[in-house]
Every structure is written in structure tokens, then in C-alpha cells.
Length: 380
Image (cartoon, rainbow, N blue to C red; front, top):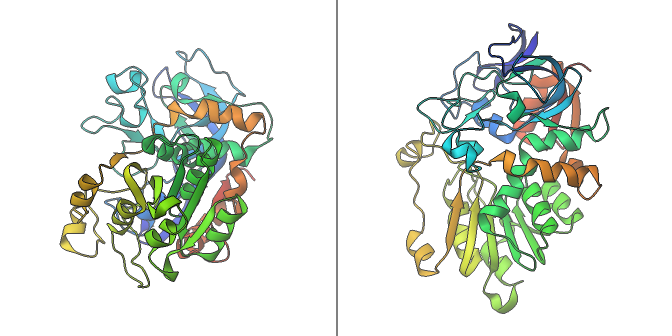
């Protein structure tokens, strides 16, 4: 089958790889109809992880069941399904507690597994014509038949639940004011989710004009951090100048310094500490890694950042971190889509055939020509 294969920093190619097969009675094989490029894929694409050439990318996958193992009970050939990026067993201590992003079974020696991602287990990615789904009864979420709302549903694999997860980590409640740092797909989903949860005012901080415009279109207040300290800009627009009730980091470790073309990995965390009012809460779904070969200094390369812990403590702030447990949210987010209460596909800028993935990666990485979220269609 054809698949997107990592060749080395800033290079992917469409190559023929081995077709997936049933390896366990609980597996299914899915014919992939939509698979999205994620900002997390860019970390590997840029050589900012330990990913080795040859890995097949793709953890945001939707398709139709082609073949089911004899142990699968709830799925049949022809079922339309979307899979969480987390590969999870459904029965370990963490899974049964709802922490499916930290499954203790699927990736021995590490809490958590995922498709097509470095250190996340042996699961081949879905930027391909087919993908194997283990523990399929647990990992597949059924969708309505047909092709309607395809670009909405594919976002259930990762970024819509991840944006929602940022709100859960920050304990966003009706009436809260919320600052979201990062106007990429996850940041926009976090802002959108905050509104779904009843936030009274949502700020989105970024420097890319197209992202800030999109934030404004969904009802958020855009904050261009190149125009001044973002925390101060936001505080000027909050009651008493105290700052927001809650804050969300949707950027992660490749954050950019203000007015300088260089990385400053802790800048978003430190800005949020200043943005959120005393006794507020921070949610951090943005990716941070234990090792970053391209870090700007030796500490950053070891995943150690200089964060204002003293101010965090002084203000009595709470902080939640970690990747999204997609299974915790995807069913009710699916139902919001079905009932037209949510339409997350507003972030999708391009739908392309699989063969155009190398060009899409290059343009998405450079943030050019309006590339904000790309959905690939392997069988287009």
C-alpha cells in the first residue's frame, strides 16, 4: 500500500509499504478515507524528536472497517469508524480509570501508545491506504454511515478532544474568562471548546494573522503578541486588570520569543502564570518532551525549562498537564457534531490526495499559503 514515510529532517515521501494484517483476534483493518496532518507530526518532520527514518506517520485516522478479527464483537465490515490517536487496551488500571492516553499495556515500559509516533509503540501510522487497529472494540468509535461531516469527524481522532482536554485540565466552567496561547488547530479547538462550555470571554494569543482572524471569526478576542506583552494586553481587558480565570497552553516546547525569531521553550508557561488571576488554573495540552535534539540550549535539549514556579506558587495557581485521553471525550463530541451543535472543521484549510503529502508537510511547516490544517484522502 502507499503510505507517508519519514526519510529524515524536513523530508517525507510516498512509498509502498507492507499492507497491514490481522495480528490478534481483537484487531480490525480499516480502509483509511481521511487522515490529518498534526502539528505534532511536524516535531518529527523537523527532526526535533528521536524518530528514525522509515516510520509511517499518521495518528488522526478515520475510515471504514475492511476486515475484522474473529474476537471482534461490536464491529463489522463496512462500519465507518474514527480512532483516537491513543492506542489503548481498555482494561489496565489507567484505562479503566479513564486515562487512555496512558495505557499500561500497549507499549511496555512506557505509559501510552499511538499510531505512527516516535516512542509510542509499534503501531504503524494511518497516513496510508490502510491501518491496523488493535483492541478494536475499545478503540473504534462508530460514525453514521456515508461521507457526511467527514472533515468534522476526523478531528475527533485528536485535535477536537485535545482542545477540549485543555479546558478540562484548566477546569473551565460557564462564565469563566479564558486565555488560550496558540492559534493553531489545537488552540482554535481549545478556544472553540471553551465557548461550548459556556466561557464568557476567550482570548487567543498568536502572531500569525490568519490564525488571529480565524479566532475572531469564532468569537474570540485576538491578541497579537508581537504588538506588546500578551499578558498585559489581556489583563487590560479583564475586570480589575486581574487577568483571566483560566489559561490554556496550546503551543508547547517550540514556543517563539516575543519580537524575535528564536525559540524560548518556557515563554508560554511563564506568560500564562502572569495572565491568569490568583487562584486560577492552567491547562497544558501543548506538547513538551523529555529530550529535544534541536533545543536552543543544553537545558532545553534535556527537557528542562526555567519556569516561574515561585510566581505559580505565590498566586496559588493550579496546573494540569498531559496528552489527551481521547476516549473520555470523543463520544459526546461526536454527538454534538451529529446534532449540528459543533462544527470543528472550520480549522481545515486543505483537503488533498495522499500523494500531495510531501508538499503539504513543507507548506504546513512553513505556515504558508493558508496551510493551517490538512486532511489527506488516501483513496481520492
